[in-house]
Each structure stands twice: as structure tokens, then as C-alpha cells.
Length: 396
Image 1 (spheres, one colour):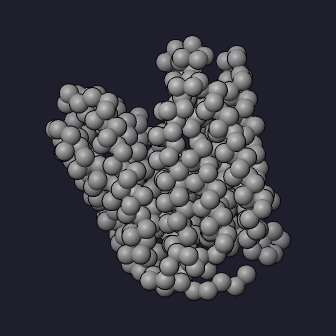
Image 2 (image 1 turned 180 degrees about the vertical axis):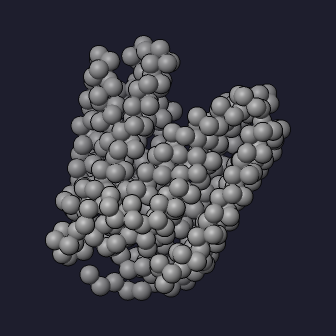
């Protein structure tokens, strides 16, 4: 497949149709992904489960989500990117239908794991499809996908709160429909991009990764980053409540995150596309640490809003360079597996972050949490910069 080379100043409209089709699936999937945000309320109010039991169901979804990143990457290298995305979206529709109709706890837990395994199965396969593009197009392509996903998420958070008033069953059917529409887009608009001959030349993923010390180091750094970053979504409401601020203020402050991403992400892609990727990632991790530290010691809505804006800038910087950085590390025949492993760092951080953040806040207080976030940001910055020479040699 031949495509034109993009310079940082050329418009997003010149990206291949494949990228726009993938962006459409991201938007539709996220905009229609209204069940997960309200899953706890559905389980406690409609299914009459205790909060603790509902928590185990949400955890089951998280366990499935970790597996989906590995499975999606593995399938993407074996049955193709397009087929894996189709399996993921159609499978998600089936799993969501099962979860919405399950009555017994074994059925609910099984359906919850299935939802986790399928809802994000498309992500590593889609990332591998973008990684199959020429290197000059990847940054803009990954940026567009991230922007579309966040725009869809912003739509979902607003719509779900309104639609939930008409019953949780409606949320399930909307989510199922969105998954099927996304599958239709893939079926009609997404071609297969897996490199020709990769099936015959494919190596086993695990032995290659275990020998790839640079990949292992990058995964470790990003697990640390996502742990630091994702703990903010758990500790921020607790910190604001302790400061006497109500849910409305918390919602307004958190909304700044989505607004800033939608507004600034396209600008960030243009500004950062030509910059050194390692430097961008390192500074972004430092910003996230600084923003999280500020949030831990802030008082008043303005202080918390400032902290959110700071770590959102870091979040955007990581998002701009995350996909193409790991794509550059991946052998052509193992791009799906490598992108799946890269996505797994987010899933692991989503488990560790809330646990570590709430434990540190509860045991040691806001000041120690803030200090830990600041130290974590500096440590991640130093670790990422230390890998710069190896990354230059690998990608040069």
C-alpha cells in the first residue's frame, strides 16, 4: 500500500481513509459506551447487589480488560487486524446483551469478564493497523484516534446521565447498537493492513519480548506512569470532598479534562509531531506528577482545576507519542502483540493506581500523597530520559 508522506504542517484531511474509518469506530464505540460508567449503579439499584459485590463485578470487567489487550494483539497478528476488530465489536454486543439479561451471580460475573475481554479487543488491533502505516503518518493517525475516542467519551458522559432516567435497559441497548455500528464500519471501510507474508515469518511473541530489554523497560516505565496518572481519578473526588466541595464542583472540575483534550489535542499533534519523542514523553510524565502533586495539596475549586489542567497537558503529550513510540519498537510481524502489550500497561495501571492512591491517602494523608506524586513524576522523567540513547539507536 502506498500513501503520501505527511509533514507536520499538512492537514489531517490527507490521512488515509483507513485512519478516518478507525477514528469513526473509536467515536461511535466511545459515544455509545454508556454502560460501563453506570455499571455500579445498575448493579446496586436494578440488580440490588451490595456495593461490595458490585465492586467485584467491576473488578471482573477489569480482569477481562487486561486479557483483552493481550488477546487482541495476539489475534491481530494471527487472524488479521480487521477480523480481530470485527470479533471484538460483535463479541462486545453479545457480551453486553448477556450482562444486561443475567440474573444469577455466576452469570453476571461470567458476562462481566466477557465484556472486559471484548469491549477493548479492537484497541490493540486498531493500533497495529495504524502501526502498519508509514512512520511519517503514525503520529497524526494515533492523535486523531485518541481525539475521536475522547470526543466520544465526552458525549457518553453527558448522554448517559440523561438516558439513565429512562431505565438502565436503554443504556445496554444503546451500547449494543453502538458496537454493531462500529463493526459495520470496520466491515465496510477498514481493509486488512497486516504485512504480506507476516503469517509465514511470524515468531512467537513471548520469547522475542523476553529478549527485548528495551521493550520491557518501556513497559515498566509506562506501568509506573499509568499508575501515577490513573490514581488521580480515584483520589481527586476524595480530596475535594474532604475540602468541603460537592459532587457538582467535582464534575465541573473533571469536565475540564475532556474539554481540554478535545480542544488541545489537534494543536498538540501539530506542535509535537516533529519533536523528540523521548523528550515529549519525559516532560509529559513530569507534568502529570506535578499536577497530581498539586491536586493533593490544593484547596478550593480553582486550585483543583489548575491541577487537572496541568496533568491533562501531560496526558495529551503521552497520548500524542505513545502509539508511534511502541510501533517503532515492534517487529513488523509482531506489531499486534507489541501494541497489545503496550495497551496492557494502561490496564495494569488502572488496577494499581486506585489501590495505591487510596491506600497512601488513607494511611499517610494528602501531603505524603502529593510528595509521592512529585517524586514519581521526577523518577519517570529521569527513567525515560535514560532510555533516550537506546531508543535513538533502535529507531534510527
